[in-house]
Image (cartoon, rainbow, N blue to C red):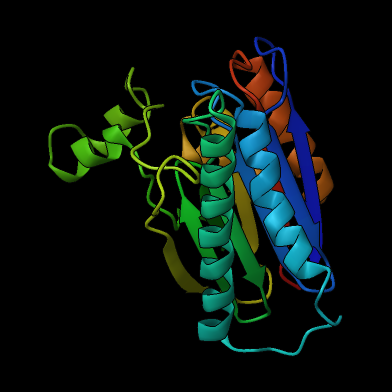
Amino acid sequence: MQFAVKTDTGKLRDRNEDLYYFDTQLQLFAIADGMSGHERGDIASRIALEVIQEWAETQASPQSDLGPMKRLGVLSDLAEEANQRIYTSAESQGKGRGMGTTLIAGFVTFSYLAYVHVGDSRLYVLRDEKLTQITTDDSFVQKMVEKGEITPEEGRVHEKRNIITQAIGLQSVVTVNADAYPLVPGDIVLACTDGLHDLIINDREIADILLSASGIEEACENLVSKALDYGGTDNVTVLLVAVD
């Protein structure tokens, strides 16, 4: 299992509110995108990943395969703990009320990806030269797509595509999307913030960049560079996992 990651502030933002974490021994990763439209988004993303890192540091390495259901339970508990910690912190400080972050966290094994997802950061899997999006955005535009009001292609460029319907820390209770996806050797797992998929709006182009790279480190560099070429209007983070 190989991990690679790249993050960039972008061309228009003053600070990077994206954060990432991975542990190669536990085969665990996470990315969080603090909400710049809300106060202290960078603190929200940091708290969310601190919760995951704190848990990881208590675990024996390497960890035996607990099975997807137990792993999903761990991830869901961590996401809910992150939500509560951010919400409580915001309430206690007053001025931080409303701070939030997206979150994706997952365990990658040789046969499956167990993951949790809140917000509009995304997970994809590249297999046999085809890129498949496996998460569904918690977003205003996604609801429009589901109602048939616009097409998925129209949603990728819609002016309101950055409006999300839930995030970690905004409310006292959060609905965590948790699932498992089967993997096979040769798959590449892509986790990214909207700074990537809002700029490279064609999944075929993302796939081609992955396929043309000599390895996942170069692929991370090239994906971020392409997002910057398209304007770099947001922080951008790309995390890749190659399944051996």
